[in-house]
Length: 208
Image (tube, rainbow, N blue to C red; front, side, top):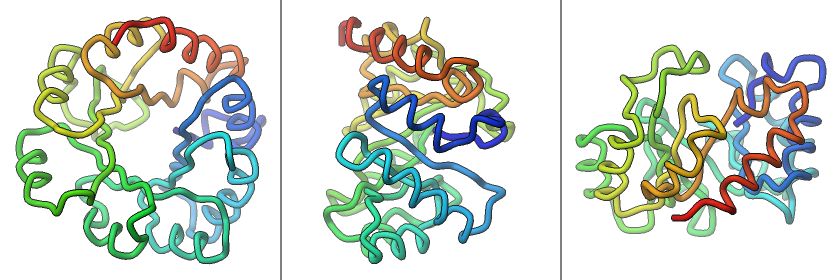
Protein backbone atom coordinates (compact mmCIF):
# COMPACT_ATOMS: atom_id res chain seq x y z
CA UNK A 1 0.00 0.00 0.00
CA UNK A 2 1.38 3.35 -1.00
CA UNK A 3 2.04 6.35 1.20
CA UNK A 4 3.20 9.49 -0.55
CA UNK A 5 4.80 10.98 2.56
CA UNK A 6 6.76 7.86 3.40
CA UNK A 7 7.97 7.44 -0.18
CA UNK A 8 9.54 10.92 0.05
CA UNK A 9 11.62 12.28 -2.80
CA UNK A 10 11.82 8.83 -4.42
CA UNK A 11 8.12 9.12 -5.17
CA UNK A 12 5.27 6.63 -5.18
CA UNK A 13 5.67 5.40 -8.76
CA UNK A 14 9.38 4.61 -8.37
CA UNK A 15 8.71 2.89 -5.05
CA UNK A 16 6.03 0.75 -6.70
CA UNK A 17 8.40 -0.01 -9.57
CA UNK A 18 11.09 -1.26 -7.22
CA UNK A 19 8.62 -3.31 -5.19
CA UNK A 20 7.07 -4.97 -8.24
CA UNK A 21 10.50 -5.65 -9.73
CA UNK A 22 11.33 -7.41 -6.44
CA UNK A 23 8.27 -9.66 -6.68
CA UNK A 24 5.35 -7.80 -5.07
CA UNK A 25 2.20 -8.93 -6.83
CA UNK A 26 -0.52 -6.70 -5.38
CA UNK A 27 -0.43 -2.90 -5.18
CA UNK A 28 -2.96 -0.58 -3.59
CA UNK A 29 -2.79 3.14 -4.29
CA UNK A 30 -3.92 4.94 -1.15
CA UNK A 31 -3.83 8.72 -0.82
CA UNK A 32 -6.58 10.19 1.31
CA UNK A 33 -5.32 13.77 0.82
CA UNK A 34 -5.07 13.79 -2.98
CA UNK A 35 -7.81 15.01 -5.30
CA UNK A 36 -9.49 12.56 -7.67
CA UNK A 37 -7.57 14.19 -10.53
CA UNK A 38 -4.26 13.62 -8.71
CA UNK A 39 -5.18 10.03 -7.93
CA UNK A 40 -6.08 9.34 -11.55
CA UNK A 41 -2.85 10.92 -12.83
CA UNK A 42 -0.78 8.80 -10.47
CA UNK A 43 -2.81 5.68 -11.23
CA UNK A 44 -2.06 6.01 -14.95
CA UNK A 45 1.65 5.95 -14.15
CA UNK A 46 1.41 3.08 -11.68
CA UNK A 47 -0.66 1.01 -14.12
CA UNK A 48 2.23 1.15 -16.59
CA UNK A 49 4.40 -0.49 -13.94
CA UNK A 50 1.90 -3.08 -12.70
CA UNK A 51 0.11 -4.15 -15.88
CA UNK A 52 0.61 -7.85 -16.45
CA UNK A 53 2.77 -8.15 -13.33
CA UNK A 54 0.69 -7.19 -10.29
CA UNK A 55 -2.93 -6.68 -9.35
CA UNK A 56 -3.56 -2.94 -9.01
CA UNK A 57 -6.42 -1.52 -6.92
CA UNK A 58 -7.18 1.95 -5.65
CA UNK A 59 -8.39 2.75 -2.16
CA UNK A 60 -11.90 4.18 -1.96
CA UNK A 61 -12.10 6.32 -5.14
CA UNK A 62 -14.80 4.30 -6.87
CA UNK A 63 -15.77 6.90 -9.47
CA UNK A 64 -12.12 7.48 -10.34
CA UNK A 65 -11.58 3.74 -10.71
CA UNK A 66 -14.60 3.46 -13.00
CA UNK A 67 -13.38 6.37 -15.15
CA UNK A 68 -9.89 4.90 -15.43
CA UNK A 69 -11.23 1.50 -16.45
CA UNK A 70 -13.42 3.13 -19.10
CA UNK A 71 -10.27 4.81 -20.42
CA UNK A 72 -8.62 1.42 -20.68
CA UNK A 73 -6.15 2.03 -17.86
CA UNK A 74 -5.13 -1.26 -16.24
CA UNK A 75 -6.75 -0.72 -12.84
CA UNK A 76 -8.11 -4.01 -11.55
CA UNK A 77 -10.48 -2.70 -8.93
CA UNK A 78 -11.12 -0.91 -5.68
CA UNK A 79 -10.64 -1.41 -1.96
CA UNK A 80 -13.29 0.06 0.33
CA UNK A 81 -13.49 0.54 4.07
CA UNK A 82 -16.49 0.12 6.30
CA UNK A 83 -17.22 3.85 6.07
CA UNK A 84 -16.59 4.16 2.32
CA UNK A 85 -18.73 3.23 -0.65
CA UNK A 86 -20.73 0.05 -0.10
CA UNK A 87 -19.07 -2.99 -1.69
CA UNK A 88 -22.29 -3.92 -3.51
CA UNK A 89 -22.27 -0.48 -5.15
CA UNK A 90 -18.67 -1.00 -6.21
CA UNK A 91 -19.49 -4.41 -7.69
CA UNK A 92 -22.50 -3.04 -9.55
CA UNK A 93 -20.49 -0.19 -11.08
CA UNK A 94 -17.30 -2.07 -11.91
CA UNK A 95 -18.79 -5.37 -13.02
CA UNK A 96 -18.09 -9.01 -12.27
CA UNK A 97 -14.47 -9.03 -13.45
CA UNK A 98 -13.23 -6.28 -11.14
CA UNK A 99 -11.44 -6.89 -7.86
CA UNK A 100 -13.37 -5.58 -4.84
CA UNK A 101 -11.67 -5.63 -1.46
CA UNK A 102 -13.19 -4.71 1.89
CA UNK A 103 -11.66 -3.76 5.23
CA UNK A 104 -13.01 -5.79 8.15
CA UNK A 105 -12.03 -6.40 11.76
CA UNK A 106 -15.18 -7.12 13.76
CA UNK A 107 -17.81 -9.84 14.01
CA UNK A 108 -20.46 -7.35 12.89
CA UNK A 109 -18.55 -6.91 9.63
CA UNK A 110 -18.78 -10.64 9.00
CA UNK A 111 -22.50 -10.52 9.68
CA UNK A 112 -22.91 -7.78 7.06
CA UNK A 113 -20.72 -9.67 4.65
CA UNK A 114 -22.86 -12.78 5.01
CA UNK A 115 -25.89 -10.79 3.82
CA UNK A 116 -24.21 -9.71 0.59
CA UNK A 117 -24.74 -11.63 -2.65
CA UNK A 118 -22.02 -14.21 -3.27
CA UNK A 119 -19.17 -12.74 -5.30
CA UNK A 120 -19.65 -9.15 -4.12
CA UNK A 121 -16.32 -9.07 -2.27
CA UNK A 122 -13.15 -10.87 -3.38
CA UNK A 123 -10.94 -10.47 -0.31
CA UNK A 124 -10.83 -8.86 3.13
CA UNK A 125 -8.15 -6.59 4.54
CA UNK A 126 -8.04 -7.59 8.20
CA UNK A 127 -6.31 -5.68 10.96
CA UNK A 128 -4.58 -3.94 12.45
CA UNK A 129 -2.33 -6.75 13.54
CA UNK A 130 -0.22 -4.31 15.61
CA UNK A 131 -0.44 -0.65 16.50
CA UNK A 132 0.32 1.41 13.41
CA UNK A 133 1.08 5.08 12.86
CA UNK A 134 -0.09 4.83 9.25
CA UNK A 135 -3.74 4.74 10.31
CA UNK A 136 -4.23 6.60 13.61
CA UNK A 137 -7.98 5.86 13.71
CA UNK A 138 -7.49 2.10 13.44
CA UNK A 139 -9.21 -0.29 15.84
CA UNK A 140 -7.43 -2.05 18.68
CA UNK A 141 -4.85 -4.53 17.35
CA UNK A 142 -6.06 -8.06 16.70
CA UNK A 143 -2.68 -9.70 17.08
CA UNK A 144 -1.90 -12.88 15.19
CA UNK A 145 -4.28 -14.99 17.28
CA UNK A 146 -7.14 -12.55 16.73
CA UNK A 147 -6.43 -12.50 13.03
CA UNK A 148 -6.46 -16.31 12.92
CA UNK A 149 -9.86 -16.48 14.61
CA UNK A 150 -11.30 -13.85 12.27
CA UNK A 151 -9.88 -15.46 9.12
CA UNK A 152 -11.25 -18.86 10.12
CA UNK A 153 -14.78 -17.42 10.15
CA UNK A 154 -14.53 -15.13 7.14
CA UNK A 155 -15.04 -17.50 4.24
CA UNK A 156 -12.93 -15.22 2.02
CA UNK A 157 -9.19 -14.71 1.52
CA UNK A 158 -7.93 -12.48 4.33
CA UNK A 159 -4.94 -10.17 3.96
CA UNK A 160 -3.26 -9.15 7.22
CA UNK A 161 -2.49 -5.46 7.64
CA UNK A 162 -1.37 -3.02 10.28
CA UNK A 163 2.19 -2.70 11.50
CA UNK A 164 3.20 -5.92 9.75
CA UNK A 165 6.95 -6.54 9.46
CA UNK A 166 9.10 -9.27 7.96
CA UNK A 167 9.18 -10.98 11.35
CA UNK A 168 5.39 -11.45 11.25
CA UNK A 169 5.14 -13.02 7.82
CA UNK A 170 5.63 -16.70 8.67
CA UNK A 171 3.33 -16.56 11.69
CA UNK A 172 0.58 -14.80 9.75
CA UNK A 173 0.76 -17.24 6.86
CA UNK A 174 0.49 -20.10 9.35
CA UNK A 175 -2.52 -18.30 10.86
CA UNK A 176 -4.36 -18.45 7.55
CA UNK A 177 -3.41 -15.19 5.86
CA UNK A 178 -3.79 -15.12 2.08
CA UNK A 179 -1.22 -12.35 2.03
CA UNK A 180 0.23 -9.49 4.04
CA UNK A 181 -0.16 -5.80 3.30
CA UNK A 182 2.54 -3.35 4.29
CA UNK A 183 3.08 0.39 4.03
CA UNK A 184 6.06 1.49 6.12
CA UNK A 185 7.99 -1.75 5.67
CA UNK A 186 8.51 -0.84 2.01
CA UNK A 187 7.61 2.83 1.51
CA UNK A 188 9.68 4.13 4.44
CA UNK A 189 12.66 1.90 3.72
CA UNK A 190 15.78 3.42 2.19
CA UNK A 191 15.97 0.38 -0.10
CA UNK A 192 12.40 -0.57 -1.03
CA UNK A 193 13.56 -3.19 -3.52
CA UNK A 194 15.54 -5.06 -0.85
CA UNK A 195 12.71 -4.71 1.68
CA UNK A 196 10.13 -5.97 -0.80
CA UNK A 197 12.38 -8.82 -1.89
CA UNK A 198 12.87 -9.94 1.70
CA UNK A 199 9.11 -9.94 2.30
CA UNK A 200 8.44 -11.89 -0.89
CA UNK A 201 11.11 -14.44 0.02
CA UNK A 202 9.85 -14.70 3.59
CA UNK A 203 6.33 -15.37 2.36
CA UNK A 204 7.46 -17.97 -0.18
CA UNK A 205 9.45 -19.87 2.44
CA UNK A 206 6.74 -19.78 5.11
CA UNK A 207 4.32 -22.63 5.60
CA UNK A 208 0.64 -21.91 5.26
